[in-house]
Length: 260
Ligand code: 5RP
Image (cartoon, rainbow, N blue to C red):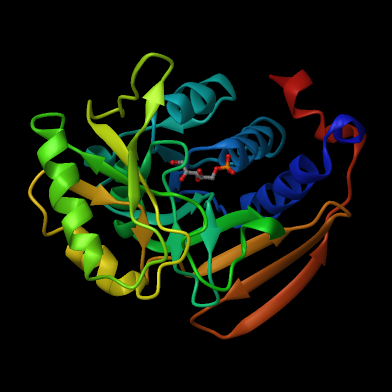
């Protein structure tokens, strides 16, 4: 199956496969959202079916919950789990300090709650997600529907004093209607091009009434697993300051779609 994958999907797949090995029996694990996280869920489902791996998964979206159940993972809520050993999720961008932009898939709120309720957060990504400075990817901000245009105006006013290159914001759409998050909120995408001080921005944005959460994950991620299309995987641990390299083999048995 991997022979049919695009180079970017191969990179996502090997990162996910490597990170799936971090899950151990008895763990409570946050399961991210997005195409890379979907590979992770499939890889974990394979481990459940083939190795009898026993763990509980806390999904960060209804999409991930549906897929996790489909592949045989036991799904529980964060309320039931209370605290997690590990969360593994994708990202839209990560920088050298492992600060992230997340929310391209619209699940940033549940993703941030789950990641911060975890002993460890691991990001899985293809190498194209690494940036020197965050901000080329539009920053998702989840806002309450009530008075969202007033919230947008306050937000744009706050951006005036911030170190960014552009200050446009757009309401995320799903066809002709606004995109709705799993929590029933809207998303404003901030087209900033460059975020000079992501830590300050994350704090200031969350002071604005109407903003529920922003997609900047600061000091939350512990490790990033970077996949390459040729099967190489690099794991960087920001706390230990280590970098490990592995090579993942593409095997016929990796036909995870066929197995579902
Ligand atoms: C969803 C996210 C995703 O992790 C992010 O958008 C990356 O997605 P993909 O793995 O499809 O590139 O934050 O809200």
